[in-house]
Image 1 (spheres, rainbow, N blue to C red):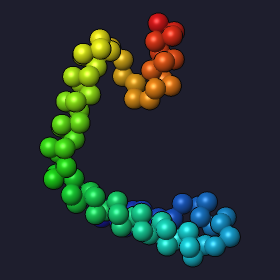
Image 2 (image 1 turned 30 degrees about the vertical axis):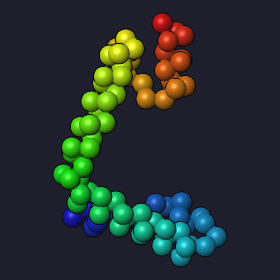
Image 3 (image 1 turned 90 degrees about the horizontal axis):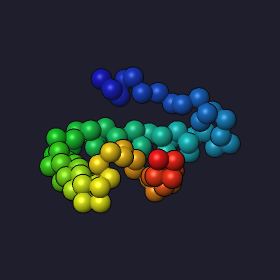
Image 4 (image 1 turned 120 degrees about the horizontal axis):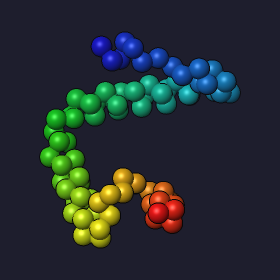
Length: 80
């Protein structure tokens, strides 16, 4: 069903080589659909990653911050 809803973004038609851009989009679309099928298999890995970051934030006392880039973290710490 998702594949029926996905269509080419309009900026593809501004490219010089439209066929190449369409091929790249189709490749990414196929990869997305493949990864979505494997979504349940990745739940355990996602859980481990979330636990790792949760422990790291608790260890350094950063539990109240919900930032995921160094730049946004520094900005929040500086403004606090």
